[in-house]
Length: 426
Ligand SMILES: Cc1cc2nc3c(=O)[nH]c(=O)nc-3n(C[C@H](O)[C@H](O)[C@H](O)COP(=O)(O)OP(=O)(O)OC[C@H]3O[C@@H](n4cnc5c(N)ncnc54)[C@H](O)[C@@H]3O)c2cc1C
Image (cartoon, rainbow, N blue to C red; front, side, top):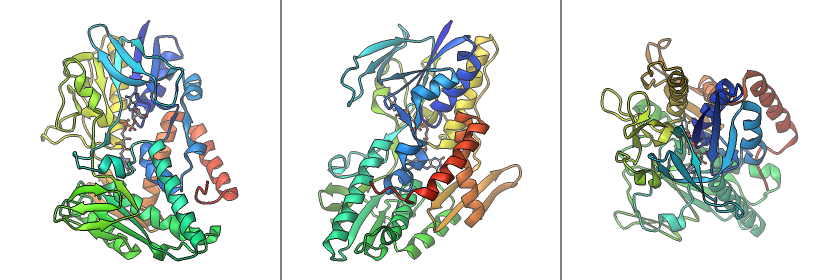
């Protein structure tokens, strides 16, 4: 029986493990092993909500051990540090807060690398030491703790002091986080934070490029910028950060931007260890280069998907690091593994851009839809955009839980909202 090891239980990897578990693992046609450095899964596009406290990771996380038992795959906790394509083994190191695990080797017949991406600080001095990142739910929760204790300190001081938060990088993460932070600060009054209100929150969104949301069309970026400025966010475009100090950023023009809390959300790169795998080819973002069927260019028993995958479109652009890319790639990798087991020819992957949405918390949602129905790109805003945005997470839930359980979960979430505060206050 073949052993298929999937490393990374994120947006793409968990969907793949679920599908292969159902189709192969449950029927004893192959052994499916999912490896992750965390015990639980949170869909990454929700991390800005975990950071602001509007999404409680401890209530909503998927527990791999239990999920695997239900869906026909095995879960192993460990951090991938190397792959030996000759011996067909992966090296797993113990994760930092689990002291009883040993470094070990795991054998595979087919390997899928779905390890996602990490923030890229472009070597900017001081960023690692002084900034918060949103690469994992631990990091988002760490930020949330700092935010909550800062709200508490200001409120208890009774001084109506200002709170300055600087966010570097005005991609979707930075923009959505800025709006979400205003939203939670507005709620504080109703939870007894008497001296901390939205007027005291001063957020700067700092972007090196000529405009915010550089990867999205002008119309979406302009609508988002208008909304952000209306809320009170200070948007600084064409502002390059040269250094982070403990009390703020310094721009390339030597201007100091003082801040109490600093967040770095200026782009991503693939995890660095991937470049050390023997024979691997990577692009500028460190993503592993793949063939059209998503096998790596250096070994056709190793597939790569999601943010870690370097796939070039026919027009030479790279597939963007997005949840929709990870989802589409997971579907093709699943089909190609099944086809390989049956001795059939592999399918080629083709990136389909179904549009982009930016959710500005309760204030607005803007974006575009693309596809056959819309005959090109269609700009959407407001309630419809919000509905489509929410449906993306629901679709991920359906992929990993099935329709019925996803429906039950949706209902349970609505019930919990009636009894709990709208933001996490602990
Ligand atoms: C705040 C935020 C908002 C976003 N919003 C959107 C959006 O609106 N729309 C959109 O399309 N995209 C969005 N994205 C991007 C999207 O989240 C990613 O493109 C997507 O999650 C990539 O999926 P993936 O499966 O490649 O990796 P991930 O979902 O990041 O999963 C990677 C998994 O690998 C595990 N892992 C990593 N390294 C190792 C290792 N060495 N060993 C073992 N396990 C490892 C991690 O624990 C994780 O579980 C957003 C991202 C962020 C941070």
